[in-house]
Image 1: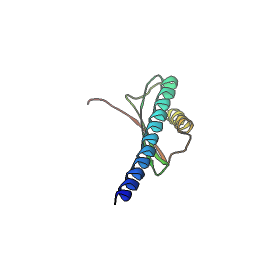
Image 2: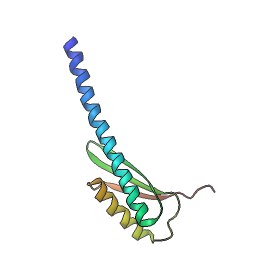
Image 3: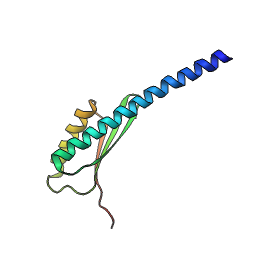
Image 4: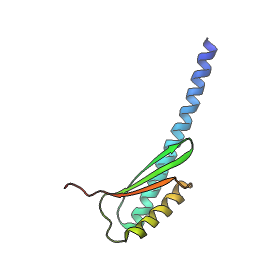
Amino acid sequence: MLRLATITAAAIGLAACGLIDAMRDGLKHTRAVESDLEASTGVKPNVGFNWNNGQLVMVTVTFPQIVETRPVRELAGLVRVSVEKEFAQKPNDIVLGFSLGKS
């Protein structure tokens, strides 16, 4: 019984380490994307991600205001290039958004 508990605890510990590493790496990638886009647009976005079983499912890039210095298509291209470069993996989907603030 003690052996089973030890094996279970070790398995949970190893699984948690992988989860912690994935979160830490993901946060490093989001900061890199934020810095890259801030340098190219002048506005720092908020970047989030969803990772499932080692697959990058979705990356969300939300700017705190509408970026009027670039057309939306050009901005979308910058976001796509930055996300794919910094995450080193193509996500299934990239969501680009703008906060409109208080109405």
